[in-house]
Image 1 (cartoon, rainbow, N blue to C red):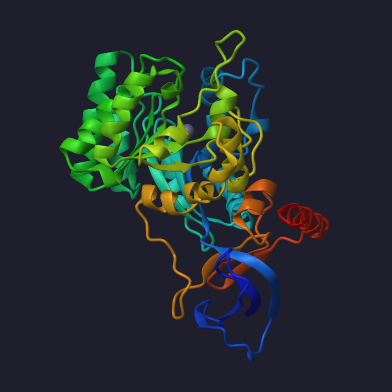
Image 2: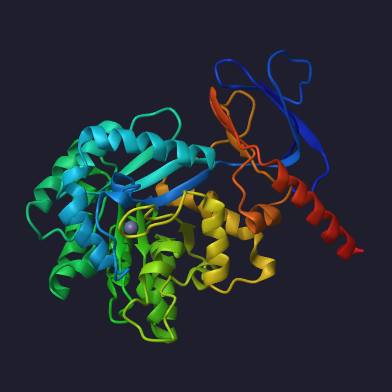
Length: 414
Ligand SMILES: [Zn+2]
């Protein structure tokens, strides 16, 4: 396959071509006389594939399996999953849903996902059996929801790690007491070191300003020199911390070298549910964390399940919502792309695919010619390529509309 007229850098007017051979390898760049299918990218911008560093694939797309979540709270969502959804997740059901979920990620240009799957209902074991596929790599977190010290969670976590889960999960604010919360962090690090795994916890996912387990996780990562393998997901309580405490916390997070994974869409939906007006946004302080030099990535979290009923794994929309929810400004738009690419690869501790001759073809071509337009419109990529597999999103009318806006913006430039 020959892809013509691809822009490699947005500030350049130069276009390139990429030839991918039958094995799915980039055979050459800028060689035009090749047989086979030809795709004209018309000057659109190439990008690394997107990453979704926080999802719950095990029960994604189960919205219609159970009653509605009428309070909209996380607690009711979890109850519905426990009482009605879990029983319906057989191996066959999971495999059927996962096929759709994988395609949804792939057409949105997402080739790498981290999925937190609970151990108590054995969904994690089903996921470990079902996950292999050529389109999307699924990293599995053995998730001890609602805590390590419930049921047989501790033994089951060990089993999941032995069966191939790459990441130890934790959820300290949900343990029965503060003391058990602290103890759960130590248990998670002990397991991660023993099995040589990564760590990613649901940490401080509340509006409670006194929920301060992120500092315990970061301190432990620092003591054990485990920062590059540690992620703190959610940290929504940071929205409600006072500024002095938050500033002190950022110093520790940076020193420890941990990553923060925020899920702005689902956090906006779940947090602030116990507030009267004004309602808190309840998201991690993404912008301040970035400015403090901390590695921040964005995830989708739940999609079409009892915890969040919408969503489609369009990571550009996730970035757009982060812009909106956390008061970013126009000069900061382009760097939002890093939160769903570069920073997310770092958080997942995986290699970033390279667009080079001799490498496996692994890239996406955005629907637009600039990063600004990609985030502004949140359109799914024009073309996604992974080895021998590819997909095209044809969105003709919207493209024309883009070109019209390009013209308007160019006029304004003059
Ligand atoms: Zn989550």
